[in-house]
Structure formats: structure tokens, C-alpha cells
Length: 114
Image (cartoon, rainbow, N blue to C red; front, top):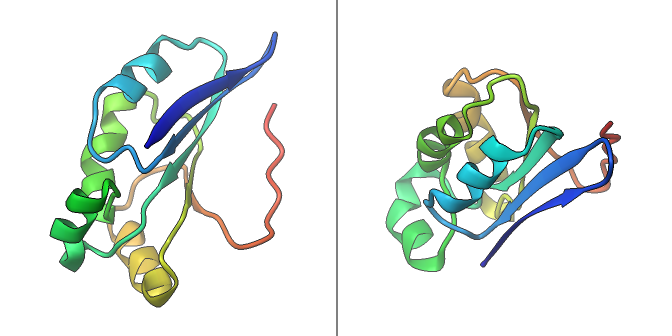
């Protein structure tokens, strides 16, 4: 649906919401020298990959293929938009990927970037 980069003079943040598997948002993120964090939706568990593809969402496995496209393992990634019935399963599947700097956001959590 939407992917964009929000920036000021010192900091930039990548936001990807319902963009499914893509190259464009990751290419833009790679070019942004001020990038400090990325917020990426991961809505469905791996077993619902067809539903995720059809609806433009990611699963942990799909996210695992997308994340390296950024080329910045040092950037913290914040996962959001886990569908409520699958929140725990998605979290477990993400943890099994053993990727660095992956943070799973919780409702009401505040993040300070910069």
C-alpha cells in the first residue's frame, strides 16, 4: 500500500506498510545515508503465506527474504501490524530467523529515534 522515508536534517526512518515483497522501498532505504531505523509490517504467520501475498502483507519468512535487501544489518527494524490471532506465532517465527536488530513492537510502545 505505502512505503516512504521520513527525514529531517539528521535522521531518516523507513516505513513500509502492506507493500508485500518489493525492491523499491529497500533501494530507497539503501540510498538514504541518514537512515536510523525501519518500521516493517509482518501481518501473518508463515502458514498463511498465500493470504499474505494476496493481501499485500508479509510473513516472517517473507520478511526474512526482504530484510537483506536493505543492506544495513546495523539498522534497527521494528515489526508492527501483527494480526491479533497470530501475534505470538508471528513473534516466535521472527525469533527463529535469528536476525540482528529485530524488535517487535507492542501496542502503545514509544520509540525514540535519533
